[in-house]
Image (cartoon, rainbow, N blue to C red; front, side, top):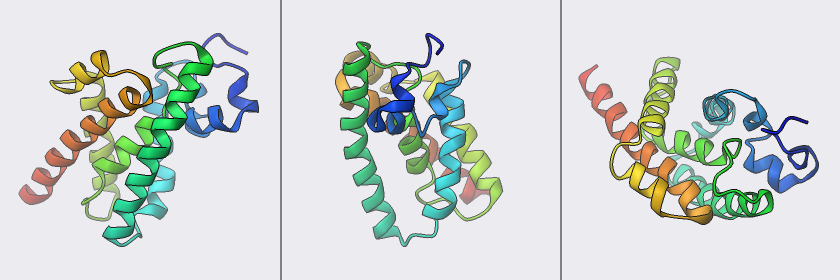
Length: 158
């Protein structure tokens, strides 16, 4: 097993989920692969009525705080690069009001990755200052909000 991917990812269901069903185990760009993997469940989740979609976001955020925090503690790191459950939820947040279609999925993916990588204020601040599972989730939730706002501007313009 590589240093990047702890063996526990394949044995521990909490770690497996935190590593985005294993998508975070790739050696390069795990956040991008995690976000890409989040598209697959999104294809089903986008069918939910808005109240159910928002409830799913709340539930996956709360679960994610625990999953990511526990996995980080177990691995002895603040935010292991392979923990990508936060990318899943951040992408799903980006797509909350997106119209159906692959154009919007691709744009949402690109915008979310842009804000998650660039970390403009307060995303970078949250990434550096908030610890534990909350900190792991918070920067991606903020990136999801930024990406959702820009995506909605594009919807309005197009």
